[in-house]
Structures are given as structure tokens and as C-alpha cells.
Amino acid sequence: MQLYSYPTPNDVKVAIMLEETGLPYEAHLVTLDDTDVKSPEFLSLNPNDKIPAIIDPQGPDGGPLGLFESGAILIYLAEKTGKLIGTTASERAEIIEWLMWQMAGLGPMLGQLGFFHKFAGSEIEDPRPRERYIAEAKRLLGVLENRLEGRDWVCGAYSIADIAIAPWLNALDFYGAKEVVGWTGFPNVIAYLDRFLARPAVQAGMNIPPRP
Image 1 (tube, rainbow, N blue to C red):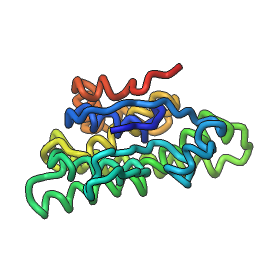
Image 2: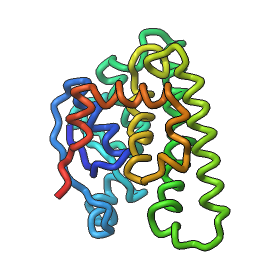
Image 3: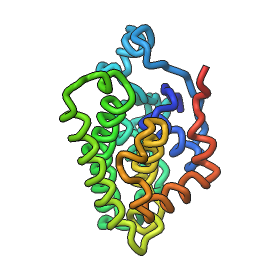
């Protein structure tokens, strides 16, 4: 398996999944610079010029398969290995439901929060964009807080839903945004992230590929 990525919240999902499943892989650093993600070589794998992406030389039809989008890659690897996607159709549906919640909600909203709180968007004088993403981050954290009541993991057993969600929670520290979202008011989420970060496969995957 060939992994093309950089250790961002979306990228580490795939490295963690590969570590959790034990699939052999080679990691290739692709930076966020246009010279990497917009290169003809990378665009031939992902026309959307975003990381991560993979090439499985042993795809389901006997030939190589290239994939982009972290959620699609997680589902593919889970189905390939039969791991971390539940054991029944109902469990699988629930896990994919929460994976999509991250892909459509938590990730994009926290990413925008980071842009308007830490990066270039923080220079915009109009407070409304920043306030909007702070409010939406709080709402989504509240949804997760309630979901985790009485649960160690989002769907009962550890799954690709957790591998998708937890790296974005960890990004709040990098964004310096824990205080503005009221992080201490979400004890279930805090304990959940601690459990996630304690896993050996997570500790390995969070640093793959190593930053230059």
C-alpha cells in the first residue's frame, strides 16, 4: 500500500488505520505546497489536489487502485481487512453515519474555526465568521458529548468513526482554540480523546509521514 500524505487531521486518519489493521505500507510525504499537491504526478492520482491519497497495488479487481478522500479510504481499508467497521449491517450503517458526520460537519467546521481563529482569517475585522464557527464548533462538540454518555467509543466498539473524529478534536489544541469553544465543558469528549491518543497505533500514525 502506498500512502501519500502529510500529518494533518485528515491525513493521519489513514496512517492510523493502516497501523491499526497491520497492512504493510510505504508512506510518502506530500506537503501542502502547490508544487506537491498540484504537480502533474499527484493530480493524476487526485484531481482535487488534496491529501491524503493511496494506491493499493492489490485492488479488489486484481489490479492497482488509487483512492482519495480520507473517508472513502477508511471505508475501503475497513472492508478490505474486515476490521473496524462492525460485524453486522446495522453496525456498519451506524459507523458510516458517524464517519459522514465528521466528514460533513466536524472536520469542515473545525477547519474553518482554525482558519478564522489562528490563520489568515484571524486578520479579518468582521467578527461574524469567527463567531459563526465558534458557535458551530460548540454545537458539534455538544452532539458528541451527548453521544459519548455511557460509551467509550462513538459506536460502542472502536471503529473507523473514531479514527475519523478524534484527530479533528486533537486539532483544537494546534489551533489554540480550546478555550474559545469551552473545551473543559465537554468531559466525555476530553476522556474520549485521551483514550484515543493512548492507543499505540494512534501514537505511531499521528507522526506518519514525519514532518521535514
